Length: 141
Image (cartoon, rainbow, N blue to C red):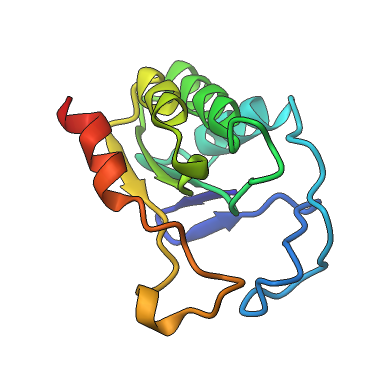
C-alpha cells in the first residue's frame, strides 16, 4: 500500500488475517507479495508527483522475513524513480533485526514502526509483539 499526501493507492488484492477484526475487506491467508508491486508503487508516486511516500503493509508473519525484502524493493524502486522522500511504516518482522536491517539498507529517509495500539488495549489475537526496544537497538547499534 502506498500512502502519501492524503492519497491512498491500496493493493486491491490484499487480504487480512481473520483476527484483525478492526480492518475491513476480505479475510484469509494473504497472497504472496507481487513482484511487480515495487515498480507499480514507484510509477504511481512518479505520476502523482509525490514529494513524500509512505510505504506500509499489514503484518506478514506468513513470510519468512516478514515482508522485509518486499519493503526493500519498494523503497529502492521509489528512490530510483522519483525524488520523493521515503518513509517506511513497518510491522515487527517477527522480531528479526536482520529483517529491519534489510529495510534500512534500501535507504528510506524515515523509519517508523506500525504499532496498532497500546498493549493494554489489545486482545490476544491482535496483540503486537512488544519489540520496540529491539527495533530501536537495530538503529542505535
